[in-house]
Image (cartoon, rainbow over all chains, first blue to last red; front, top):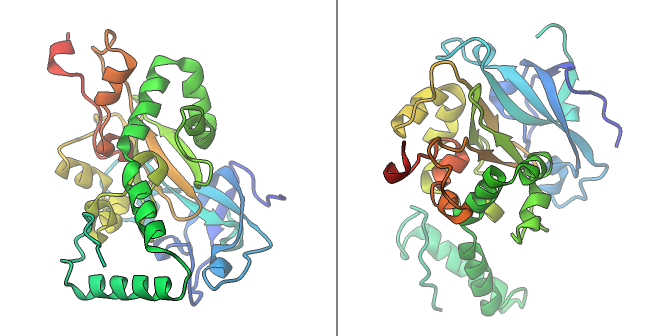
Length: 97
Length: 208
């Protein structure tokens, strides 16, 4: 497993829609976050959903996002985070979070 | 065909369109020889055999045994297997620890991913659109509706289990429980505490 990103790396979730089964929720599309943890490599669910092998496996990351960057009216302190599990092909290198 | 086990879902009565569709699919799968009635019933029984008691045992052991706590946090699945919980074929389990600084809340916005090997079947509210959409954007309001509010200086961390990992919360051991044994400790840990919409409380008799 070769992970492109490491814990602490700034990343951005790719914007845009992909038809069919995806595991990247819309509310994170285009949002900047930071890699919290590399979770391992898993068969790609976007292929598994259609009876394919899911190979090659894709690296999955736990990515932290500032809640206020997701929801402008967020109730809670500025340092609160939401974490979601995002596959590598949905991530690109990010600038400042 | 008998199919009288107690569905906890709200999808309707045994005569609802969805129930009728499920029965038709079952009948077809059996007719085509892909599964047997006994296999279906065995699987239903297996699903019903898993419950939050498993998660509560993990928490109580972690509270009582520092070494186990470290193993639970570094590899939840291995720790579950160590306690004899059937998790070999289950997805990865990541256990997130509540501390005075952070309170964790679990949700799956995309569907209803849930650590079934340690918590059993998810409650209806966990699968509802309302919980799934609100837990990510207003977690504090959601917890208040469950009757719980984290202390003011505790950060809330929401975990949206969008992929191949399942999450469980390791709550803080309540003060005043020093005299309780592991099984009494496990009794304090409810399903809601393991999802993060509540926290364990000491039984009133044990409180200082």
